[in-house]
Structure formats: C-alpha cells, structure tokens
Image 1 (cartoon, rainbow over the protein chains, first blue to last red):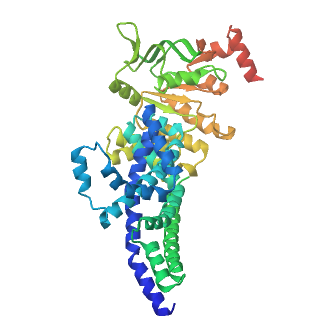
Image 2: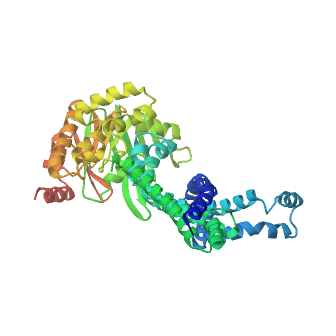
Length: 234
Length: 253
C-alpha cells in the first residue's frame, strides 16, 4: 500500500468511527441505569426475584457477547415463524424490516446493553455491599430518610469505590464494539476487513488497531483524571 | 421528669437471651454510665433504645413519647413511624467508630441533618455548627475532611454532629474504645463539659475511673441483667454484690 491509499483507508475508517462510537455511547447510556436496576433486583429481599436476576447475570456473563449478538439479530425471523403467536404480535413483528440498518443497530445495541448491564450490576452491587453498616446507622441516627441516606450518603461513596472497576468495563466496551461486525454491522472492524481484501494488505487492520488503541488511551486518561478528582477524601 | 424510661425490656438473638428484664429510668440532667464485661448486653441495650435492634418485650418511652408499648391484646408493639422519627430527633447517638461521612467536610457533616432533616436554613445551621466546633476546640478544622483528623478529633466532630440537632438526651456507645489511650482524655473532657451544662447523657463505657468521676448513677450489667443501679459510691466502693466486686477488682488490678 502506498501513502495515498493509506490515507484513503484511514479516511474510510474515520467515517466508520461514528457507528462504532454510536454503539459505545448508547450502550453506556442504557446499560448503566439498567445495571443499577439489576443490582437492586439482585439485592432484593424477595428471593425469587433475586434468583431470577442471578440467572440472568450468570447467562450474560457466562456466554460470549458475540453469540448473544448473533442470537438477538437472528431471533426475529424465527420468532415470526413460531406458531400460535397472537395476531397483534405477529403484525407488529412482520412490520420490521430485518435487512434495515436501524434493525441491525437495534439488535446489536440490545445485545450489548443486556450484556453490559449484567457486568455493571455486579460492580454496583459490590460497591453498595462494601459500604460499612455504620454509615447507614449514622444517617438513621440523624433522622435521615432511606432515600436521603442512599442519595446523599451511600451513592456518592459508592461512585468513588466503583470508578476503577467501571473504567475496566468501559475500556473493554470500546474494543468489544468490534464484535458487531459478526452480523455485518458496518463499523471500523468490518470496514478494515473489507479494505484488507481490497488492497490484499494487513495495513487496514493495523490502522483499525490504532483507532481502538487511541480510544482506549483517551478513556484511560479520562478515568485517571476522574479518580484523581474523587481523591479529595479517603 | 424522666427522659428515658425502660421497663422489663428483653431481647434475644435466637436462643441467646442478651437482655433480660431490664428496667431503669434516666432523669432530666442526669449522667448515667453503663458498665459491665463484654457481652453483658450494654451495647445491645443502647441499640434497642436507638431503634437499631428490635426488642422482644417490655416498654420504652423517651421524652414522654412511647416508643415500645403493649397494645390492648398484650402484644409488644412499636410506635407508628412518625413517632419513631420524632423520638429519633430527640436523641443523639455517638458511635464507638465515629461513623462520620467521609465524603463531607467537618462542617458539612454537622449541618447535614439540620439542613436536610430539620429543614433549617443553611446559614443558620452553619452558624450553630461553627459555635459547636468552637466548643469542641476544632474551629480551624471546619473545612477538613474526616480522613485528615485524628481519632479524637473525629469523635469530637461526631459529638458536635449529634448536638447539632439539639437532642434532649445524648447516648454514647463506648466513645473512647476506638481511640489511642492518649486521645481518650480529650473526649472525656468534652463529655465532662457537657455534664457541667446539665446535658442528659447515657454512656456505655469501659473507663471506670471516668464513670466514677462523672456519673450521677452507674448501672452495672452482666449476663443480660442489670446487677446494680446506684451512685458511683454505692457501686464502686460499697457494693455487696459478688459479681460486681469481681468485675471491678479485675479492672483495678
């Protein structure tokens, strides 16, 4: 590959940075709040709810994300063919164009959010359970309500505790977005593969690697900055 | 007027009875120390009064409000939530391990409850907090975080935090047990000052000398029972009870 074609490939990959970032951003946006809900469900005192949540977490963490993406993406046509499906559901599902970009994005995002919510849930739960009982008791002794105790006393301390573990997840996520190529979602890895064939060269893959590396570095710096900011107390 | 009235209180953890038929009262302005060996039930008693443990049987009333009563079927029941909250605000609690909020400055720790629970004006709460800090000898520490303070200083902040709600009675759960011996003095001094101001206090402690000096009354507990309840002289000097004598001897030697 000459300099010109390297620039051209870089330009193409740069363009497909946007769908990559779209998965990254939306996954964080939805999986963090969902993770909090899942963490609460797992800590729920009603046993069946806690068990069901645990099964969900076990499955999500125990099977490959790539497999989950494939399952969510290919599930719809099979569900549509199922017999005994209520009519309104059948009509709703048949209205979806499986070949559309929107559906592809939706399927990939669904799998990512479900998967990452399970990981975040465990991080949040760990952080909440690590809080000393004395903090709850001190708040109660001062007459604070349960929501006040959670939002003013517990949560701010939990956030500080979970930043290091969360930063790991977030950095992993930026690299995991490449798994979306398995269902032909057009993002950096898929495009790099195409260019590799185009030019019969490995260089497009290296360029893609540089892109991921740069994003991971930016996140690393961002998180070490946040950790420092939160270091005003021990 | 009795600030605290405990009548026939009992509590067990499973099979293990930790409080057995506990009855005592604390009058306004009185300083009462509770002493006794580890596992005698003194901390559990304090935790029952502060709603951290549920008692099984008996009655508790604080500042004229019934917290734990018998209903007309003879069952032991707690007061409605609203009353429990009212009682909570009438009593202050100082923990063995301070339990300050580490993510807040000293000042924020003290004004947290006045502002967010009593809905006081922030400037008014701050004024009061500054006053309390001066009283605790910590005027220069208002903007520090708890991690930058010594154990003794942290405990004084936690006393200020409890006082910020203007409680009618202050409970101490072994306030010096987590401190180095050279730091216990500063806490005991603060408690003495509060006693001089006629603050009603109930102090669970292992500091015998201190209990003797400061208390109007001393309660000796063992095995979940109140063994003795009398003036420091009666308990420390003239006790007839074998168990009390044994316990005190071990402390003196």
